[in-house]
Image (tube, rainbow, N blue to C red):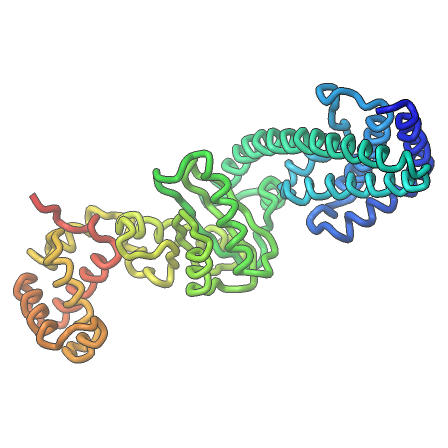
Amino acid sequence: MTGVDSASILAIVEQMDKIRDEFIDEVFEMMKSEIRGLNYDTRMNELWRASITENFLAGIHYLARNEPSSLIEAPAAALAYARAAAQRDIPLAPLVRAHRLGQARFLEVAMQHASVLEPVRQAATIIELVNRGNRLIDLVADQLIIAYEEEHDRWLSRRSGLQQQWISEVLAGAPIDVARAEKGLRYRFGGRHVAAVVWVGADVPTVDVVRLFEQVRSLISDELDPVISSLMVPTDEREARLWFSSVRTPDAARLRAAFSRAGIRARSAFGRVEAGLSGFRASMKQAERVKAVAVAGCGRIGERVLFYRDVAPIALMADDVDELRRFVAETLGDLAADDERCGWLRETLREFLARNRSYVATAEAMTLHRNTIQYRVGQAMETCGQDFDDPDAVFAVQTALEICRWMAPAVLRAQP
């Protein structure tokens, strides 16, 4: 680049410095109007404006000196803002977009000043402005992303420990300082809550788990919109507890469809919507019982999203799987065997009893011929060995069959 062109850059820098305050005001207001999620609180707004100011100063400094890329460092205020955003769970995407938007506006204004130069100097000057500007934008953005992610990981680690402590105390049911607990968890116990347990299998890489849990949290929040607040506390590296404060009751069909569309590689168990601090505890207790049913069933029922209302009677019994297995064996006899034949005999008998012993209704429900249903029911009753004219025996059989529906194979007798 010739000396004349260097003089042109310096002239532009001088003009940019004269409009510093005006430019910063303009960019700050533009960002607030165009980017959602960053207008957080007074402290964050102060950090945000300081970040814009130092980015502007860094921009004119770099244009003037054109230092080597290895010497370029993100402004301290910009890094402080990125770290503060990480501590408040402000998403990274709008943060980076704000940075790029501000720098793009900086280049735009700089090129406007270049347009008043002599025509012979304009092209080379604008090319140099773009090259230097883009280099600065990328290098600073990379440093902001690293600062954010490192702080977010540290903050999650520290906060997770505090949250685990508070959650343990709250769920234990002992008297607590509600105000301190709400402050520590950043979640209020007033209003109505729905709790969920989310977990992933060993097929999901550990590095993907946190991102997947956040995806689940976001998806559920969208379906429950408006959500007053939400809370997610990891139980371990493959499970997390979630609470949502919302006036809406989850729509099972919509939520399952949303999970399916998003290809979520996680399973979720939901409690009922409950009110207040006691409801905060109760909904999670229900969700954990639903999870116990789902885990025992090994996913055979084909649902990745389960609700307490779907399995409430079974969930209330799910705490003692050994006792359930004993009850199923005593009630169903040889029909409690874990094999394919007994599986479809049990399901046919369950449908038959649920439909008031109607062969026609059962055939329609299972899309099978009436004779097939009749044969299977006869085989199931014979294998079971119960007296189906005894109402108490029939009730016990129906209960055992429902347990098998949700919790097989954990409650079945393994084949030798």
